[in-house]
Image (cartoon, rainbow, N blue to C red; front, side):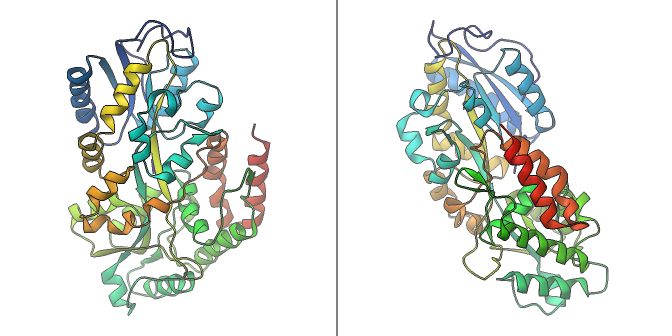
Amino acid sequence: MLFAGACGGGSGAGDASGGDSSGGGEEAKTIKLVAAEYSKDNTKAFWDAFAKTYKEKTGYTLEVQVVSWDNIDQQSSTMIQNNQAPDILNLNAYASYAKDGLLHDADAVLPSNVKSDILETFVKYGTYDGKFYGFPDLSSARALFYNADLFKQAGIAGPPKTWTELEDSAKKVAALPGGNAGYALPLGPEESQGEFSMWLFNNGGAWKDGDSWAINSDKNVETLTFLKKLTDAKLTQNNPARTNRADAFDLFKSGKAGMVVGFSPLAGDLDKDKKVNYVVAPFPSNDGTESKTFGVTDYLMAFKKPGNEKAVKAFYELYYQPDQINTFIEKEGFLPVTKTGVEKFQSNEKLKVYLDTLPNAQLTPTDDPTWDKVKLAVQQNLGSAMTGDPKAVLDSLQKTAESQK
């Protein structure tokens, strides 16, 4: 799931070159937000309107800079390295900045009623070294999408509840005329950690065991070996190692795949295209026990800058108002991060399968400052297991993770 800015106009609050890192000093009247672009149609329009409301309600000025996900990592890193960090940064990782002492924690800038409304799972993964730094802006959760017409043609009564049933369903779909993939498996560099997470969580696996990395655990080796089995049996599309999530989605949207792991924006595309008769179901666990979902959230983290605490706190107080955050989430097609948001969206039947599992969603270890480097290694190397040795690939990734500082 998930996506800051070219250094242009304004320096944010106070002295952007550094100064008192505790946030003290003359009170800042202007703060800067660098936000990721989720969509061309909605993101900039929302933040521009938000800035206007923020000015009217608080008297503070919010400078907004919206940047493509393609550039956000590099550009935000450059800004921070040049001591030109924004006051608030929208990004999908926060822990390395928390480790370096650059961020405000919740006690400094997050109203207590806001923290109590955020779903516990997001507070957990937004907490580093006992303090809450990673404030979520929106979320997504994954589920199994299946092509109801292909399932009917193949004589499959409903969604699989176990991996054995999933394999059997994939065999039946792949055996149909037309060259369909039974299951679209994206293990390419875009987001292979996301696909693998969905599988390993539903086999009782995890990326970490307490403070220790568990990438090459027996459960995870079993999981990756099963994915290789699907690939070897030609139940997936060709070359999963080079297939990105977007490619797998396109295959499913074309009607040429029986199943794929997807999320609510995929449903939105399918509804717009009206080409595929699809159903969304919980992802099967290996042994048929309760499904677990892989959750993703992005963060609105606050950098310590002289005198910016009050203006930053006012930002969060406004953003987390239900009429603000839930409007943003709804327009972007994602899922809520607050308890009141879950209540609001419960009436949407299309979101029910996600919302039922969202409070207990499991995330990748974004609370570990080294996760970014580990994630990159996973993205670049996990897919090679489809033509190699799954255990050797996971052993190598385990060594990479343990070597990070």
